[in-house]
Image (cartoon, each protein chain N blue to C red):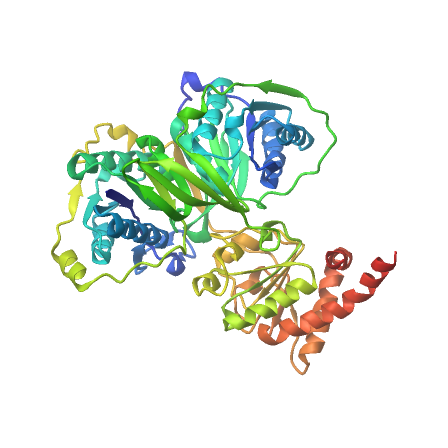
Length: 282
Length: 352
């Protein structure tokens, strides 16, 4: 079985600061990580490989430095890594990104074997759109299984797959066909540490680097800014609220007195709440 | 930046809302979107339509009625047993066919698991732009959709346009837009459409559905009262303090992201940019510092009470009421005062 996992190198959003004057993201010194959601996808791919045989190829699109994320994936146990990097991809929105990645996946298929499954995380922590996975599925004409919590079974002979998929208010049990694209839900597994062998192999492995032409992309107009129907027109900081909180004084008071004051204050500010809360209780 | 729209897109008119219908229920986000869609359609001087996709039967007819009641001028209806449970393949084909045939200029969907799954496929099929998780929608002077969404974990907002492609698509999370008032508007014009597809063409089958069950459902997004905890609660066992207060005032409980990462709470209780957006009448944030990612999920609350030991915590910048105190001590005190204060009216209610 051949599995391709799409990952993204993202700035650690917890450490992002916005420049107070220019309202731009200050990237300097912000560490980059593998998108945390993608690690659940990678682990699931590695587990499937371990039980069914085959190999896992990790793919990312990004600048040269994204090689770090790929090398990290190799230390976890991935078998191969492809970096799709070309200036013509700069400014890609989700539609253009899914185009480039789907082309690269097709090329990976030619070079290293047709993938049975393509994995992604459910979304990235920088874009948060959850659109690239479905975009890739559509372009490759793969069945699309999003928000998957569990892969129940895979039958390679009959090309069948059964998964549990998170939906509103419950879990759908779906049976579908390979090849498919799966976006993995968070918290369903934990990325392995990777063995010493993997670490050694990763250190001296060659990362395949492809530009647009290497990936077989001729339609450059479908990439980057030109291939992106959406355009960011304005970036701005959220307006601060005019007033900050009314503080309830706590010194020299018991917690009980503070609580009394808090509740009184809540019900004064929102008188309708008293009835609402009481009827909630009934 | 903007070019003349290509000829074949010029006839795209009207605002559409995809009516999310799953297992017989219309998701409330569809009504919230109809409210927003009404405003956009009025600004553009065009009609507002609901797109209803579902199995033949009462649930689907109900969705049609409700689309009108919440502001639609007309409904595009695609009724077939193939659309009984949500599956990507038939829903993508159905919605894509409708769009190609009737040409809306704006198409809005809820950013739910269903809506995001569907929107991504439809936009890629149509090769058009899609803006995820918008917090504000507007019409520009030249009639383009200006879709504003948080970026970089909520620390910035950006306004996005879809140039030279139609429709302009956007998803909006539940509870970001206000729920419009329901009217008794009668069912208006319904345009039926067929889905040229047979079951055999669809590779994906639904084998079953495991409902979360009423007791376990975190109905956070639509709760009137929410009590949430953050790292300031210190330990997993203190989650019961939250639950006690939430139960006492008949609310739901939730948490900020770090508690999910620590495994103290399940992910469907998470509030914020990567969790749920809430719009309660009362929100109590206990031991939550109020990072921007959390703020974007709660600022629609009518009244925010923040309890934190750090007087400089950012939560005090957007809370309405603040207490500098240890939430571990204050939560039980609040529970006691609330239960005492609310008890008399509760008795009255029981008598009458």
